[in-house]
Image (tube, rainbow, N blue to C red; front, side, top):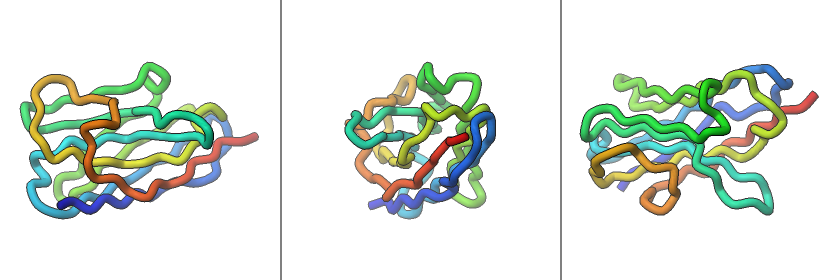
Amino acid sequence: QLRVVESGGALVQPGGSLRLSCVVSGNNMDYSTIGWFRQVPGKKREGVSCRSTYFGISQNYADSVKGRFTISRDNIKNTVHLQMNSLTPEDTAVYYCAADQNPRPGLCTLDAGPYDFWGQGTEVTVFS
């Protein structure tokens, strides 16, 4: 079992930056893939970024955030960060962190299906 807790959501102006954090606790942390997802009310949950370290380091980004968002991991604190730069109103959403405890080869997926453990979400609002 893994427990996932996100933080860092806030109100920010367009062009601004935020860093979201995801703390994962439990067993086999080293074998987990961490994914960041976001959801706007009435829309499907969207995969934003993921990071896996089981078969070497694998990172993946949605096209909509490439070049603006960066996923990273602080091994000492068991925390995965999502650095978000050049934010736009289209980035407004509830952001969720999720963990997949199963080792999977290849590029980590932005499909929500394999992720078994989810946080409660943290809200990001980008407004003028």
